[in-house]
Image (tube, rainbow, N blue to C red):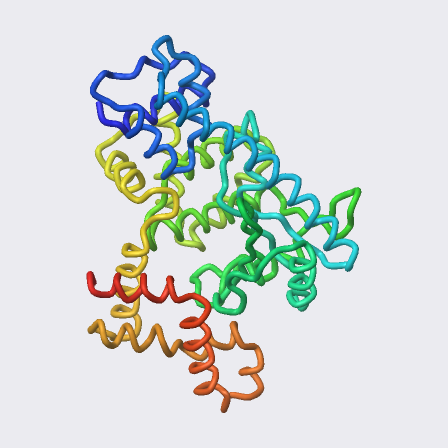
Length: 371
C-alpha cells in the first residue's frame, strides 16, 4: 500500500464515519502528513487518525496536533472574516457573491473538514474599486491587483488571503457564455439584500467548470473529488439534474462529469475503480491541490501551439509578455475605447509584474526552460 492509498483510506473512513484501518508499518507519519498538507485534507485525515489504536507518538504526534490546531484556527478566522467582508460590502451597497470553498464548507459534516487556501468573492460589476477601498480599510494589503485577468488578491497576515473576482470566467474561456449573465440568476439573502447566492444547480455547474479548468491546465488534488462527492450527496435533491444533463453537452463536459462522479463513487462508496479512473486518480495525487506551475505552462504552450500556430518557446514567451488585445481589454477596460494605448499598456503590465510579482516572473522563466 502506498502513502496515497492509505491517505485515501483515512479520508474514506472520515467521509463514511467508519473505523479506519491501522497504518501499515512501512508508511511514515511524516510522509502521510506531508501528502495530506499538499492536498489540503489534513483535517479529513486527522479525524480518522484520532480513532486509531496506534496513534502517532512523540514528534509525529506534535506535528499532527499542530496542523490540526492550525486548521481549526484558520477555519474560524476565514468564516468570521467572510461574514465581515460581506457586511462591509453591504454598508457600501455593493452586491457580493461568496464562491467555492466558503460554500463547500456548508456541505461537509464539519466546516474544518473543508480546508481552503483563500476566500473567493464575485464583486458587483463596476464596484471593484470601491471594494478595493474596503479591503484596505480592513487592513488587507494589495498583493496582486490588476495583474490577473479575472481577480484581485489581498492578504492579511498570517493566514488570510482573499480573491475578489471581476467575473467567474474570462472571455477567453470556452464556457464563459454560461457564467456571463450569472448576475441575472442570483438570489438575495433574506437578511442582507447585497449578499447574493447561486442556485445549487449553478453552484454545481460552476464547480465542474472550475474543477475541469484546474484538472486540464495543471492538475488538481484529492480535495476536488471529496467536493464532488459531497456535491452529489448533500445536494442530491437540490440540483435540477435534468438541466445539468441538458447543459453538459453544450459545455463539452459530459465525459469529465462522468469521470469525476465515477471516481467519487469508487473512492467513497462501492463504485468500480477501473484502470482509466486509476490513471485519473494518480494524476490528481501527483498534482497536489492546485496542480503545478510547470503543468500549467505545458498546457498553455500546447494551447498556443494549437490555436495560434506558436511553435517555439520564444514565441510562447513573446505571447505571454504581449497578450492578445481581448485579454488586455479585460485587464485595462480603457482599451475598448482607446486601442492606441495597447503598446503602452503592454509595457505597463510588464514593469508592474517585474516590480510587484518578481517571484512569479522568476518561476515562469524557470518553468519555461523545462518546456
